[in-house]
Image 1 (cartoon, rainbow over the protein chains, first blue to last red):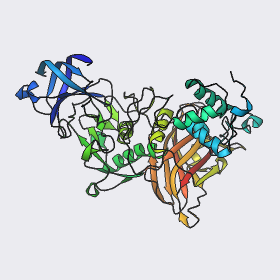
Image 2: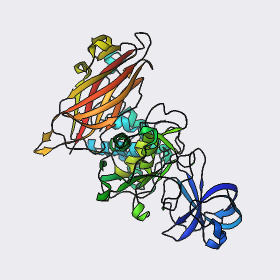
Image 3: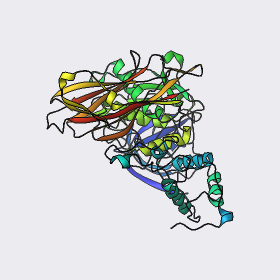
Image 4: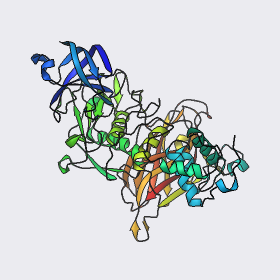
Length: 92
Length: 425
């Protein structure tokens, strides 16, 4: 399973209703709408105080895109990954 | 290098088969779609060619294996490891018939996979922005202009309806968390986003959201810190129709915002037609450049109606409107026709003569506005879509708004070659 380490990435908390999961959305700079959507399989990976859509955080985490169960992108420019482990999630 | 075929390997082809192959080659990037745009008619000659050069046949003759088509075939054959015969031989025809997935070999657009299962789409506004003093009417025009880019290349139409009519594409200006799972992040981050066509996105499919934290404008130049609404809208509508990002820098579907862009790149056109196909022309009507009407003759230094076209020399620091009346068959075989797009052929000789606006009329009703397009230089085939593709009733007119700045007489020259329109059923 290919894993990617994200370090100190600025992201924004979202909640994907149709799958019932929290996400961290990381915008790629200098783009109109390119976005890495990191799905948190378990909401407890995120401190309760951060589980609020729209909250901006700094994220260090290990993610993977290899899970075949990951949903297809729904937004233009979106890439979906799953969070395996959060090292740091701090409010900005 | 072309290889000589044995007689048994050669598959004689009817004109219709060759046309089909040319369409295939165009779809998959081996032929520039513009080269095959004229169904069975020569490509428009460059007016600057000497007369005999201007009458020469096009690079691609529809229905014939000419040099352009042969070249494209050899390119295709090389890509697939076939003998480069430049002919529609058995192996080539077999390879073409297996290529059904729609993904390009050349060209960098990417289709998401979802598409609308109908051609006539509706859109509506949940709300508006008043950035840069924009009025609702201006926003309506800007969004229609963005849709018109895609309409001009396909059989898709886009009609504005009231939001209570539950349109296919809902447009919102919102900031921060707005309940769709992808909150906006304030000024200068994500500019906008749009959901792909059904089914994956559920109720949100096709919807386009614009970050209200950005400073939207329709003016060009945009001014510092402002974002062109037409450009970003056209990009988002590309996603709403099923296009992903392209790796072609300069295409509308390239991920980055590089300033205002009021036209599709050939890669964008290839992408959208790979999903929805092009349109069938019921009638293509043209009028010659010498028929142009001038709204303010006193704002011209000179006008010359030559055999090829009309030369106009605008006075410095003036604006003018030039009008074409297009002979319009509104009914054919007892059926009323619709307008797909207007087409202009013109050039300006410097940035001292700038085409700012193109408006399209049916009788006295304006049916499309392409504003702030800021075109200079050679424009030998420029399309202007009509997003909602209405039935036509009273005759089509095309009005072109031009600004002439300070410069030499030659710099303030522009030539109109001709104007036309594509009508559809």
